[in-house]
Length: 256
Image 1 (tube, rainbow, N blue to C red):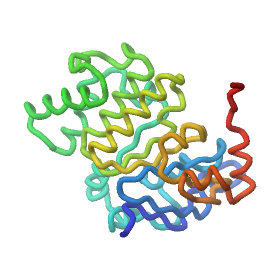
Image 2: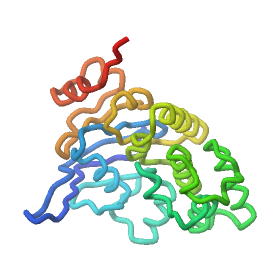
Image 3: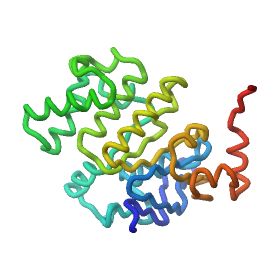
């Protein structure tokens, strides 16, 4: 079976005072439909740059991104806009990614309106259902992001991403800023939504304990390259590289 997402030799570069900084250096990975591929590595390894390049939030310098048979890098503005309905993202900090001037209802509804998914009445009903699906009260639609806790704001961000009925969601450190209890609740929510909607996740994280909880497979990134990729249990039981060994050794151990 062909993968939903196929990334080959992707390169991402940024301008710096010393010239071009290569954040992603020929990275390749595949994500099967319905799975959760975790992308892990230390800060600065290139994880977020790779995720953004897949979505073309930053433009790759080289390489190929194929989504469900379509060459994403070849898409012009309007085809890319349509493709983004199928490929969404949830960022690490919902306080920064949610417009503080907009109500939660407007935030969640924005994508529905942009993509003309439903008429006005149906759009309102969709927003209510989405808020319920992520564990919020439909009455919350009239409130603003600053009125919510961090975990609730992240639920709003998840509802916004799901509003356009995507197939694939990049979760970029989406639970790393949450406390332990709320993190577990949001992970449970993500798993339930995946099962109910047939979603495919690219789960970017540095916390391997969280990764073990949610991922089908794990890709390890180091200095812009994918150095190892394996089913989650296999990687934790027998990591193939010294770098992966070092990441696993850094997982905190409980004293009991």
